[in-house]
Image (tube, rainbow, N blue to C red; front, side):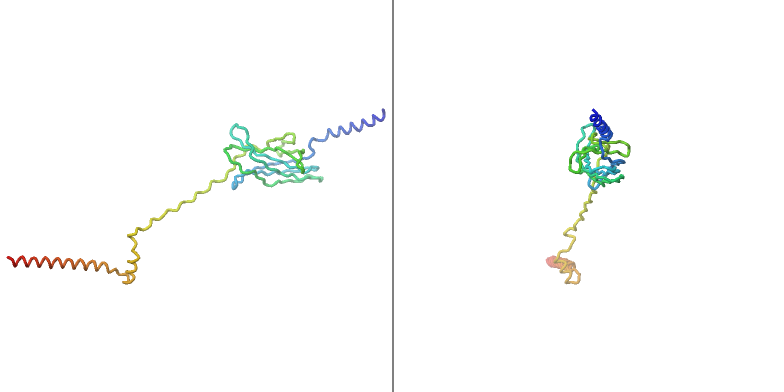
Length: 225
């Protein structure tokens, strides 16, 4: 009977200690999940910062992007993973995931949201983790999936600036430019075109010929009378 009582006391104490231990012994506090848009690639990006508490093992957090259109069902648009390093020291350590981007999401979505959907240990097995946002809300693996960010505007690349089409200049007509033979002839005469005097001389000869013929006919007509 005394032995039973001696064993009962440690068992009760052990049970009490186990009940006092929180469900998640791995914590990140002061968490801020910021969201940006990479306009060069059209990708929605996130960055997680916080304070890793002592006694926290390495954790892999999976975030998923959802597209929303009106009152329709949210559409999954890809996932990213964030590695939270271990902290086996005596004091909290700062954590910054750096900028991590989802794949570019195309479609006619009004807004996007980001959910925490999974947490695993370094071996890829389901694990526990408590995330306390800087705004005060606390999420654990038991709350998954948990929506962390809502109302994200679509991230689109700027429309390319149209390249102006060059206006084709009117080509000069064939009659406006001298022929190769004419250019060669002008070059041989020092640039003086002899065609014009020759044409004038020919007209003068024709005119004199007509005048002489007309005068001859006039004299014959006078002699016959």
